[in-house]
Picture: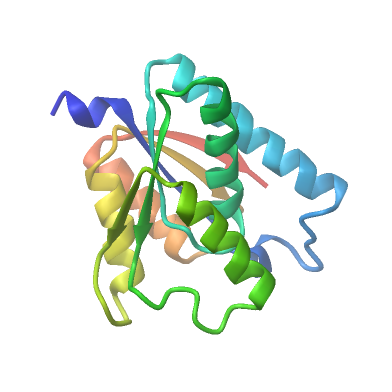
Length: 166
């Protein structure tokens, strides 16, 4: 149980669900990435050094990159990729697959929850992350879906939730 206290998980929306016309390379995108980086730094300052990321496109990758930037300054920081199924990036554009692969190569731990896609594999991944963390950072816009369900599960499990509203 003591080990769980030193872990932080992340949940957030994919790019297409953030806002109509969302672009990462916009003032709003840069501001969101700064908020995520600030939350990661604050969690680290509170004594958490292991971060778990679901590696979906959008906010998950922003989170992973923020953790890697923090690790450049603090070598005790570790990043775990929680992969819902082995073919997670199938069908993604090549630039996004390359970005994902570059992050994955830098992860300290890779946990693949199952080999094949099933309807519940994303939620199984999310529950794994919550079950293995004490804190959840969440980028949430109020819409229904996996981020909301993960936050509700984390609430039931008693995690501290740091919400970044967009």
